[in-house]
Length: 447
Image 1: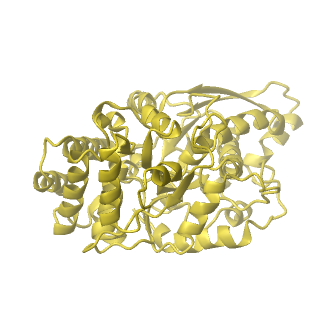
Image 2 (image 1 turned 90 degrees about the vertical axis):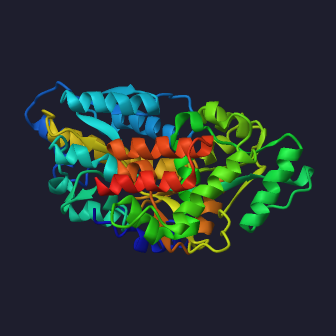
Image 3 (image 1 turned 180 degrees about the horizontal axis):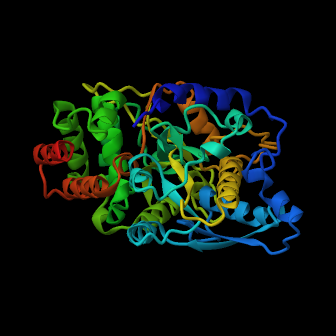
């Protein structure tokens, strides 16, 4: 799949940090600028049809009370769309993330998808495109809309020259540090990987979980292995392996696997990471029970929430460079790759496309203000005095980014993603050697 995001990301982040967003004189919360999607309501009024068009919408945003910035932004969009698109009645079903993935697979097999549905980009999205189940949005992607979307953020939604999804966020994974725990226990905030291990050992000795990890849900382990692989092999080589263009079975990726396994074996993830859910891992970090967490920028909202025991005590740092590795400190895990797709079988393509655009553009602004990631759309941000401070820290960390590797399950997709998650879980659990791990992953590329 064509993907130039790596080259564009550093420029994108620098722009975000430097200009703090220049308003483009458009109604970025609405859909009036779309030649087709934006005229859906007008067309209804001209025909005198007072009945609303019903659009079914599925998402993984299952909890309207969540403090996660993406959830906050999504429910903000759902509420404001009632006013801005009065001709549309949205029927939303939110399902918890892992259950949502199963729900999508079942619905895809039975060709029973809703009009609009949340999905991840790249390899996760490819089966829907290949099966003709999602609508290309090229006819709705006007020059005006393109001018408001930041460069490089459409790549994970583009297949064979056709765009199938709008972006809404650029999420970046960083190492979250509980400064209070480090200070109280006399532990140095790590600048090198050796110092990272030293810090882990110091917290283990004091009975404090060094790194909170919810491996029961499998995907958090992808992130932990992912950043080690980026540091050891470099973003370009690791991207090549994930896309089947290079080998997994290299000394660098074997070393990355060994480092993750050794970190787990020494107690770096605590005593029960394999049986801990991601929700519980986040809760433990919010309660000040873990010193560090490697996670995406959606964690910002949780850390700074009013009910968080660590509010004001957390900072974000780059994951340390590993001595002997090819990767640099300015290569990051993350990117733009979450969207809302439109079913090709929808009876209301114009309205469905309008809804997808509206939600993505509205969420882009609101999730940034809620502290969950960098926006993918240009917008006048207004008063940013209450902006989550961790978002500003991440923008500063990534302003000179030279490479990105998107989330591993999204890049690979389908059964490959399932295999990757299970293999990494076996690696962390100690039931598989790094050598076997890399050879098993290489088999994926030979199929």
